[in-house]
Image (cartoon, rainbow, N blue to C red):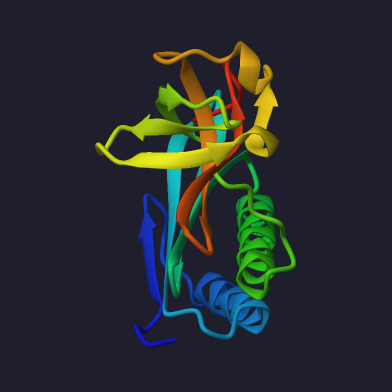
Length: 180
């Protein structure tokens, strides 16, 4: 790691055994993502009431190139369970970051929104984007409805892709679809 491990404890007595356990768990995380730049682990006992028992919160903040993984796990009564759950979750998230980095996980492009600026009789048209550009699209790029059913001023969503002629709108559709 570029930045030394930081361990913070609040509401509980600092113990060498607990710190050693945390250091060992962080070392295992580094094996899952060897380019981990920094890691901060905070352990807190949030309740010390004789009727309600003890409650522990573990927070892990780990930085890897291009991403920050932040985990918080709570557990009543057992600090070891809270640590296990937090570090297991951090390991899963770091593995996911590695899969994305290697390209093992397909990332979906986020559709943009625009307005049909104009259509031609030759089977293509142009979409006005939020930043004032116009993107070409053809009949083959329209998903729903058909090109003939589109009209200037219609709000559409699309994926911008680079083609030989420059940026174009692909997968053009009308309606509400997922996040965008």
